[in-house]
Image 1: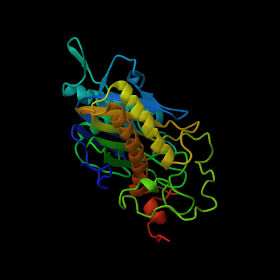
Image 2: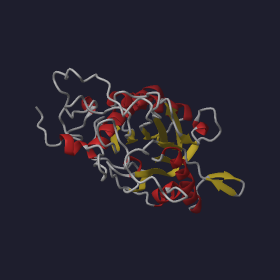
Image 3: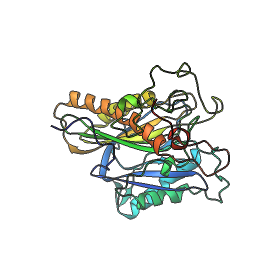
Image 4: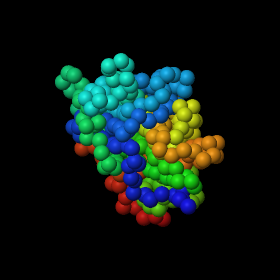
Length: 339
């Protein structure tokens, strides 16, 4: 019988492809999750300052049931242009919600704030996000790049470079769940000055260093550490994707449960200037044998995967190539022993 634990090396699930686009000099980018067939989707926004596009249509009571793609983007509100480029690429391939002879691609989007990370934001008009959205869709495939890519290219935390992370698991009956997270938190993902991750209890093998928790916890482990001051925007965004067959209401419950992983892996989470947003999508390839039990297990594992993906995104990130930027985890802590 399939196990709930999964290999540390991520694999893109069937029916999904991932594409990244961006510019290292600008220090921002876009990630597209493109579904081979429309997927049932929902969203949960628990941060105090979310930014998104077409998120309202994902409410359970709204008419549209499925999406063609999900988009994660840097650039704050400028990044909302990316969905237009993604829609253009999808429309060119015949994708979209049918309205008479017209098809309108459904591409909900979440954005994060990466405008103060040292990159050159004095772009010529128009901003680059529309084109990056298009390129992310066109380049979507089976590659599982992590760290400083796509929406995670310009991401940061209070003390380290952030990034894009992936983690997966399976339920006891074989249903797949996978998390895709761009980690751009107002706080921290590590414990004090130890370099160990708050997500350590959920680690599979040594997927983000295998160092576990410090024992005892350092005296300052629970101290508040945030970017600059509480008014600086942040935001961790992402999606959990399952091969299960879910309704929109069930997908919404999955998105809500997945946020538990964000709270486990980042301190603090869901703050006033966070836009913490998680999508949940279901490709519908596998039926639920026991709807309540299966959904509960999927939600539990989704939260675990979100926590792991957050740590992986930070673990694989690389510092931005500008003066006085934040170090990456490997430079700051990679050479330390496991004492």
